[in-house]
Length: 209
Image (cartoon, rainbow, N blue to C red; front, side, top):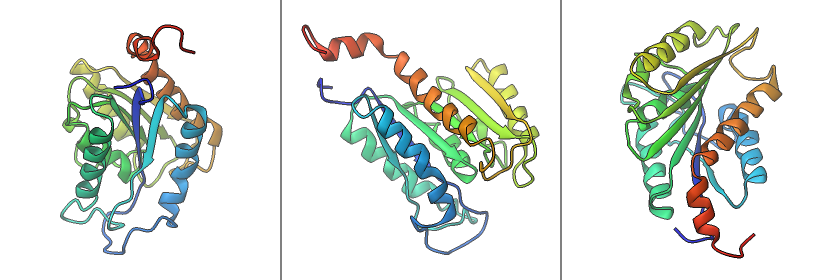
């Protein structure tokens, strides 16, 4: 890694739905919902973080876990572009489910799951070295805060650094408590960067600023 390379890679994973063969669009509500997260990270950490929002091929998870193939491809591209750099995932709803599956890969160091759709104990895919933060609105009626809390408790029992953050009266779409959701993403990235201070100093080199 050169002094011009990133110290962390963040992939932002939008939501979707359980069953749909509709092509995924950057103009879909689930994609639009995540652009503020992507943009805020890019603006706050333009030199230290490479952030990309993932686009799927289809809007639905479907019976064949359709979002996983394009998400894995995005992870491979990120790893190739920044070899050896820790990868962190931010996923909302279905994107949280995608993140759990991608976090089976040892190149993934962190997951921020926002109102995740952890349908079938998807958190069990996450490997033991991943730091997990899971936020869920207590008023969410599309995915379940109780299931997220259960998943985090199971991860903690396995020895992972896992934290559950309830959002009181928060809904699924994250349109309430907006600053809480946004700040959580920025804190997540800041914490990821705090894990690589020695590498950061080495990459800057003597006399660098």
